[in-house]
Length: 218
Image (cartoon, rainbow, N blue to C red; front, side, top):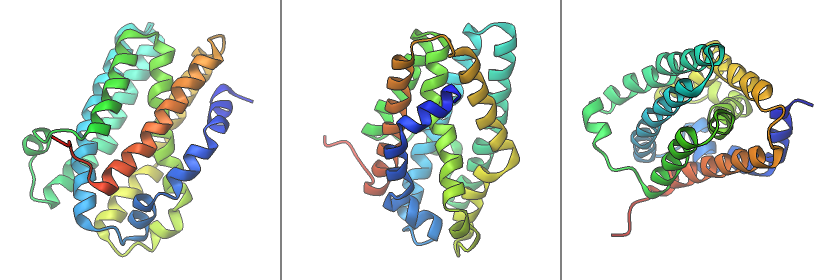
Protein backbone atom coordinates (compact mmCIF):
# COMPACT_ATOMS: atom_id res chain seq x y z
CA UNK A 1 0.00 0.00 0.00
CA UNK A 2 1.34 3.43 -0.95
CA UNK A 3 1.99 6.08 1.68
CA UNK A 4 -0.87 8.31 0.58
CA UNK A 5 -3.25 5.34 0.61
CA UNK A 6 -2.26 4.62 4.21
CA UNK A 7 -2.79 8.26 5.18
CA UNK A 8 -6.15 8.36 3.45
CA UNK A 9 -7.26 5.25 5.32
CA UNK A 10 -6.26 6.84 8.63
CA UNK A 11 -8.56 9.80 7.88
CA UNK A 12 -11.57 7.78 6.70
CA UNK A 13 -13.81 8.81 9.59
CA UNK A 14 -13.05 12.51 9.09
CA UNK A 15 -13.58 12.36 5.34
CA UNK A 16 -16.89 10.51 5.71
CA UNK A 17 -18.09 13.34 7.92
CA UNK A 18 -16.94 15.84 5.29
CA UNK A 19 -18.85 14.02 2.53
CA UNK A 20 -22.01 14.17 4.63
CA UNK A 21 -21.66 17.67 6.08
CA UNK A 22 -24.85 19.72 5.53
CA UNK A 23 -22.96 22.40 3.58
CA UNK A 24 -21.52 19.83 1.17
CA UNK A 25 -24.77 17.87 0.78
CA UNK A 26 -26.90 20.97 0.22
CA UNK A 27 -24.35 22.49 -2.14
CA UNK A 28 -24.27 19.44 -4.41
CA UNK A 29 -28.05 19.06 -4.30
CA UNK A 30 -28.41 22.75 -5.21
CA UNK A 31 -30.42 23.73 -2.13
CA UNK A 32 -27.71 25.54 -0.17
CA UNK A 33 -28.76 29.15 0.64
CA UNK A 34 -26.86 31.43 -1.71
CA UNK A 35 -25.68 33.70 1.11
CA UNK A 36 -23.80 30.77 2.63
CA UNK A 37 -22.14 30.00 -0.67
CA UNK A 38 -21.13 33.65 -1.08
CA UNK A 39 -19.57 33.58 2.38
CA UNK A 40 -17.74 30.38 1.48
CA UNK A 41 -16.57 31.80 -1.84
CA UNK A 42 -15.01 34.86 -0.21
CA UNK A 43 -13.34 32.82 2.52
CA UNK A 44 -12.07 30.18 0.13
CA UNK A 45 -10.65 32.72 -2.31
CA UNK A 46 -8.49 34.14 0.45
CA UNK A 47 -7.52 30.60 1.42
CA UNK A 48 -6.50 29.81 -2.18
CA UNK A 49 -4.25 32.86 -2.27
CA UNK A 50 -2.52 31.42 0.79
CA UNK A 51 -2.28 28.01 -0.88
CA UNK A 52 -0.60 29.65 -3.86
CA UNK A 53 1.97 31.14 -1.48
CA UNK A 54 2.49 27.74 0.14
CA UNK A 55 3.25 26.11 -3.21
CA UNK A 56 5.76 28.88 -3.94
CA UNK A 57 7.43 28.34 -0.56
CA UNK A 58 7.68 24.61 -1.20
CA UNK A 59 9.18 25.22 -4.63
CA UNK A 60 11.88 27.41 -3.09
CA UNK A 61 13.13 24.63 -0.80
CA UNK A 62 12.86 21.76 -3.30
CA UNK A 63 15.45 20.28 -5.64
CA UNK A 64 15.15 21.14 -9.32
CA UNK A 65 13.01 18.13 -10.26
CA UNK A 66 10.57 18.61 -7.40
CA UNK A 67 10.52 22.39 -7.80
CA UNK A 68 9.36 21.98 -11.40
CA UNK A 69 6.47 19.82 -10.21
CA UNK A 70 5.40 22.17 -7.41
CA UNK A 71 5.54 25.16 -9.74
CA UNK A 72 3.41 23.26 -12.24
CA UNK A 73 0.98 22.52 -9.42
CA UNK A 74 0.81 26.24 -8.65
CA UNK A 75 0.18 27.00 -12.32
CA UNK A 76 -2.54 24.34 -12.63
CA UNK A 77 -4.22 25.59 -9.47
CA UNK A 78 -4.17 29.14 -10.80
CA UNK A 79 -5.72 28.07 -14.11
CA UNK A 80 -8.37 25.78 -12.63
CA UNK A 81 -9.61 26.70 -9.14
CA UNK A 82 -8.54 30.32 -8.96
CA UNK A 83 -9.60 31.08 -12.53
CA UNK A 84 -13.00 29.54 -11.84
CA UNK A 85 -13.33 31.63 -8.69
CA UNK A 86 -12.47 34.78 -10.62
CA UNK A 87 -15.48 34.08 -12.84
CA UNK A 88 -17.78 33.23 -9.94
CA UNK A 89 -16.84 36.36 -8.02
CA UNK A 90 -18.09 38.50 -10.91
CA UNK A 91 -21.48 36.78 -10.74
CA UNK A 92 -21.83 38.13 -7.21
CA UNK A 93 -20.94 41.63 -8.42
CA UNK A 94 -17.68 41.56 -6.47
CA UNK A 95 -14.14 42.41 -7.49
CA UNK A 96 -10.98 40.58 -6.47
CA UNK A 97 -9.86 43.65 -4.52
CA UNK A 98 -13.09 43.62 -2.55
CA UNK A 99 -12.88 39.90 -1.83
CA UNK A 100 -9.28 40.02 -0.60
CA UNK A 101 -10.14 42.86 1.79
CA UNK A 102 -12.61 40.68 3.71
CA UNK A 103 -11.29 39.54 7.08
CA UNK A 104 -10.83 35.77 7.19
CA UNK A 105 -12.99 33.97 9.76
CA UNK A 106 -11.30 32.43 12.83
CA UNK A 107 -11.19 28.89 11.43
CA UNK A 108 -9.89 30.12 8.08
CA UNK A 109 -7.20 32.18 9.80
CA UNK A 110 -6.07 29.19 11.86
CA UNK A 111 -6.01 26.88 8.84
CA UNK A 112 -4.04 29.32 6.69
CA UNK A 113 -1.53 29.92 9.49
CA UNK A 114 -1.06 26.17 9.94
CA UNK A 115 -0.29 25.74 6.25
CA UNK A 116 1.99 28.77 6.00
CA UNK A 117 4.01 27.85 9.09
CA UNK A 118 4.37 24.22 8.00
CA UNK A 119 5.34 25.06 4.42
CA UNK A 120 7.82 27.76 5.43
CA UNK A 121 9.40 26.33 8.60
CA UNK A 122 9.25 22.55 8.20
CA UNK A 123 10.81 20.10 5.71
CA UNK A 124 9.39 19.89 2.21
CA UNK A 125 7.57 16.60 2.78
CA UNK A 126 5.71 18.02 5.78
CA UNK A 127 4.41 20.94 3.73
CA UNK A 128 3.33 18.66 0.90
CA UNK A 129 1.51 16.38 3.33
CA UNK A 130 -0.21 19.30 5.04
CA UNK A 131 -1.70 20.63 1.79
CA UNK A 132 -2.67 17.22 0.39
CA UNK A 133 -6.04 16.82 2.20
CA UNK A 134 -7.34 20.03 0.66
CA UNK A 135 -6.70 19.10 -2.95
CA UNK A 136 -7.48 15.42 -2.60
CA UNK A 137 -10.68 15.74 -0.57
CA UNK A 138 -12.24 18.17 -3.06
CA UNK A 139 -11.90 15.57 -5.80
CA UNK A 140 -13.34 12.83 -3.60
CA UNK A 141 -16.22 15.05 -2.50
CA UNK A 142 -17.12 15.81 -6.12
CA UNK A 143 -16.81 12.15 -7.09
CA UNK A 144 -18.95 11.08 -4.10
CA UNK A 145 -21.70 13.54 -5.05
CA UNK A 146 -21.29 13.50 -8.84
CA UNK A 147 -24.83 12.23 -9.49
CA UNK A 148 -26.28 15.10 -7.46
CA UNK A 149 -23.94 17.48 -9.28
CA UNK A 150 -25.23 16.38 -12.68
CA UNK A 151 -28.81 17.02 -11.53
CA UNK A 152 -28.01 20.19 -9.61
CA UNK A 153 -30.58 22.88 -10.52
CA UNK A 154 -28.24 25.73 -9.54
CA UNK A 155 -25.98 26.72 -12.43
CA UNK A 156 -23.44 28.43 -10.15
CA UNK A 157 -23.09 25.32 -8.00
CA UNK A 158 -22.76 23.06 -11.04
CA UNK A 159 -20.10 25.33 -12.48
CA UNK A 160 -18.21 25.37 -9.19
CA UNK A 161 -18.34 21.61 -8.61
CA UNK A 162 -17.51 20.49 -12.15
CA UNK A 163 -13.98 21.88 -11.82
CA UNK A 164 -13.09 19.18 -9.30
CA UNK A 165 -13.95 16.38 -11.71
CA UNK A 166 -12.01 17.92 -14.59
CA UNK A 167 -8.83 16.34 -15.93
CA UNK A 168 -6.66 19.31 -14.97
CA UNK A 169 -7.76 19.15 -11.35
CA UNK A 170 -7.39 15.37 -11.20
CA UNK A 171 -3.87 15.86 -12.52
CA UNK A 172 -3.11 18.18 -9.58
CA UNK A 173 -4.23 15.50 -7.11
CA UNK A 174 -2.25 12.76 -8.84
CA UNK A 175 0.92 14.85 -9.05
CA UNK A 176 0.72 15.85 -5.40
CA UNK A 177 0.10 12.29 -4.26
CA UNK A 178 3.03 11.08 -6.35
CA UNK A 179 5.30 13.65 -4.68
CA UNK A 180 4.26 12.61 -1.19
CA UNK A 181 4.62 8.91 -2.05
CA UNK A 182 8.09 9.46 -3.46
CA UNK A 183 9.57 11.92 -0.97
CA UNK A 184 7.88 10.66 2.19
CA UNK A 185 8.81 7.01 1.85
CA UNK A 186 11.60 7.12 4.47
CA UNK A 187 10.17 9.92 6.60
CA UNK A 188 8.49 9.51 10.00
CA UNK A 189 5.07 8.04 9.27
CA UNK A 190 3.65 9.21 12.59
CA UNK A 191 4.61 12.81 11.83
CA UNK A 192 3.06 12.68 8.36
CA UNK A 193 -0.03 11.00 9.79
CA UNK A 194 -0.39 13.82 12.30
CA UNK A 195 -0.15 16.48 9.59
CA UNK A 196 -2.53 14.68 7.23
CA UNK A 197 -5.12 14.21 9.95
CA UNK A 198 -4.76 17.81 11.09
CA UNK A 199 -5.22 19.07 7.54
CA UNK A 200 -8.27 16.81 7.18
CA UNK A 201 -9.75 18.15 10.41
CA UNK A 202 -9.26 21.70 9.20
CA UNK A 203 -11.05 20.77 5.96
CA UNK A 204 -14.06 19.59 7.96
CA UNK A 205 -13.92 22.72 10.12
CA UNK A 206 -13.79 24.92 7.01
CA UNK A 207 -17.08 23.49 5.71
CA UNK A 208 -18.60 23.88 9.16
CA UNK A 209 -17.33 27.47 9.36
CA UNK A 210 -18.98 28.29 6.04
CA UNK A 211 -22.29 26.68 6.99
CA UNK A 212 -22.44 28.69 10.21
CA UNK A 213 -21.04 31.84 8.54
CA UNK A 214 -18.55 32.00 11.38
CA UNK A 215 -17.41 35.40 12.61
CA UNK A 216 -15.13 36.80 15.26
CA UNK A 217 -16.84 37.16 18.68
CA UNK A 218 -15.39 40.64 19.26
